[in-house]
Length: 290
Image 1 (cartoon, rainbow, N blue to C red):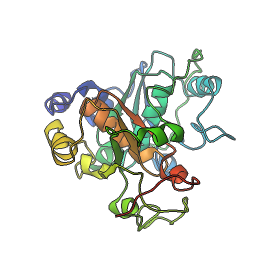
Image 2 (image 1 turned 90 degrees about the horizontal axis):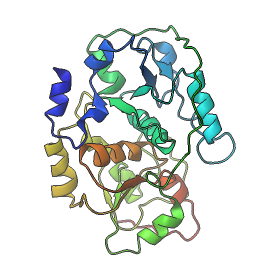
Image 3 (image 1 turned 90 degrees about the vertical axis):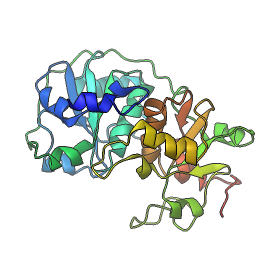
Image 4 (image 1 turned 135 degrees about the vertical axis):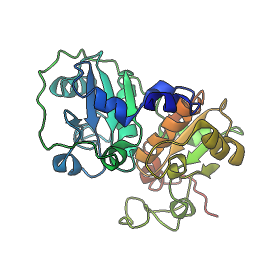
């Protein structure tokens, strides 16, 4: 019933989402691995979906020295440790914002693990429905995950490309941060430490569409019709044009990337994960303020 409701929302790729009900029915499915990835890395230890493993966006997915992601061999080792095989269906969920679930999902795409989905509503919806949590950390037999071939190009852009992109007449950028960050009043989200960048503002030609406009109060995604009104009718984005999303460090923009690519069917949308922490510190990088 819940999966039918997701299908009825009119998404371009509806099966990239699963409901909390679906997850509850597949807790013991050996072909499914549930993964929790949160902004607050302590949440998992306080209670998580039974059988779920934790992937820390910072310590597990980031290279320990370079500002980049894991090497292919490191990614394969992480998968082996988490009991994930190359053909395992991985279902991500996160805390109330579900940013980091989308971020982890996006990183998995870099390594070619496309058999992945997002639990609609995340941890927030699971708890609000009174579903069980546990502190028991599961142990799965290690797998023989084959080392993948990482390919950033379809999913990710770098600052050099953004510099060239904004010179184009058809440049389509989406700044998913809060309005205060977009105008330069803030360097980070309100109520967060204002650090990470020397300058405030936004990348030239970027439209401000905060990520939060895409979700309902319970954390689930809005219908395709509602999303089209926001991104296409109101803001004038063209699904056929190349699109780049960015935020501060790439997590909120991965959420919007997910919405544009899978829910609205944008043909060519990528995430600039260097985002404002990089752009706002670059020498001679152009910025705009109202």
